[in-house]
Amino acid sequence: MIYLDYQATTPLAPEAREAMLRWLGDEGDTFANPSSTHKAGRAAAAAVEVARDQVAALLPRGGRVFFTSGATEALNWALFRGAEAKPGGVAGLSIEHAASLQCLERLNANILPVDGAGLALPPDDALIPENGLVAAMLVNNEVGTIQPVADFAAAAHAKNSLLLCDAVQGYGRVAIPDGADLIALSAHKIHGPKGIGALWVRDGVDLEPLMLGGAQEQGMRSGTVSPALCAGFGAAAALAAERFDADAAHVERLWSLAMDMLPEWTLGGAAAPRYHGNLNVRRDGVNGLRLMSDARNVAFSLGSACGSGSGKVSHVLRAMGVSEADARASIRLGWGRYTSEAELRAGLTAIKDAARLQGVN
Image (cartoon, rainbow, N blue to C red; front, side, top):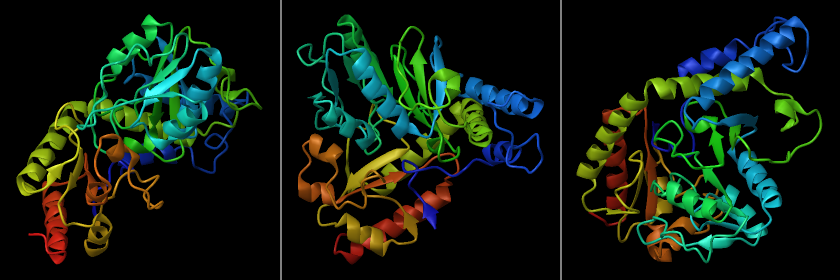
């Protein structure tokens, strides 16, 4: 199997796996609850704090990292409790991930438009709430476009509102801009384990907990913390920081290769500003679902993995003004650190061969 679905999840880094194994042992000092006050518990708690610092190193200064079960929980926490803390209203981009978009709909938010290239239009003061909350993702998960988060942060702050940034697809891949008040993260998008994410909260922002019980995570998120998951997340973050430039250069090489191999395909979303590990393309006459079936040895998607089984057309592409027919002809390819040029070349060749089966040369 050639894996080209890095936006859905990334392969677990060997370094992250090794970091986790230390806390999955059967010795008393390797499975203890980090909330326990005995020696083993304190050792587990120390491992969690090391991981917290590693995750925070890729984020702006002046804030706190709280571990969660994933980015979905982090986004729900930020949006629902943020809307309570700032009751003046909510706004968010039309291309937000479903984990944000469904919350925005529940909150009757103003939905902010994007252009045909998948880039947010300049902030409209009439749509930015006063003393409220604005959600603007960093890198779109379906077309890879990089959004002007700093512009929306400035517009929000001018009206005494908070800015929430879904940085899931950008964290460890592109620089996180200053200005956000809340930042949601996910470990498994940066070669860490599934089942853990984080919410970064800027100092001075008061947010009530979403989950109550044992007052773990500095009293902000109840539930027993997993040292193993935290250690894996931390190791993945540290590796992303160490390899930031090398990973970026590798992704650019793969992007250039793909552009050379797919000249007849239409690019979905702007070529820049964009994270070049995300390629959304389409061809007239191609059925994306059939393409996946015919190129079954290549792992890629039709859009967000969270909505791929629904049969619905991508809300991101529709927000960009893409027709339903073109949306159904679109596929998303993703690559990164562990993708070789040979793998990408073979995967793209298989996809082009599958397109020919549909009569598209």
